[in-house]
Amino acid sequence: MRNAAASAVGIAAMALLVAGCDDMTKQKKQNPYASRATAPGEVPSGTVQYGEAPRPAPPLTMALLERGRTEYHVFCAPCHAETGDGHGMIVQRGFPAPPPLATAELMAAPPQRLYDVVTGGWGVMYGFAQRIEPDDRWAVVAYVRALQRSQHMMLADLTPQQRAAP
Image (cartoon, rainbow, N blue to C red; front, top):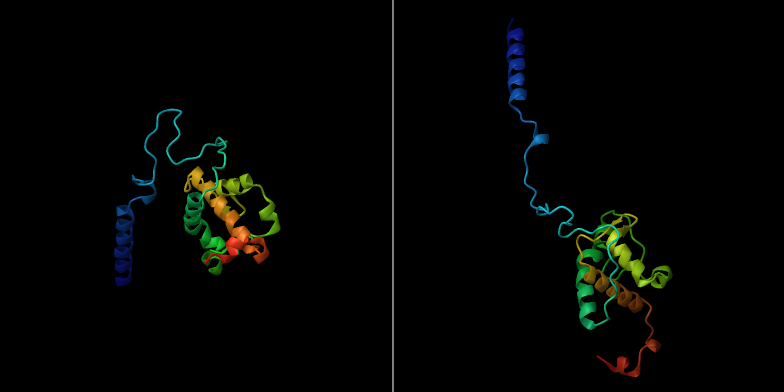
């Protein structure tokens, strides 16, 4: 009799617990990352439309390279590494390694192709269109080109002034 009473109390307790639980899948939530409300036909800020209008590459300047370096180190170096060899910290933790940026194939790719990869991703790499502004994507491409050249630079490629520079 005692076991029957204990079982009945246990079943009653379980029923009360289940009845008191909320269905957490249907809660009202606030998403701090959600876009503000938009008017019909308006694209929310920070989104990329399909077929985004092409942006021409800006002129190459030292400021553009510096910006590209900053953006590369924030968004690209975790996988591609600071040197572009494809052995970044994420790869060292088990993520698939991207190809080295200084391969002949990537060095021969047109700048627009690199821009498109930064924008939309490639393979397991996700696109950075939502994270990197279009002009900053061009800055990343410019920095990647400088990084590629640095991997294949020979002393004979430098001018006498460049060789003498500290």
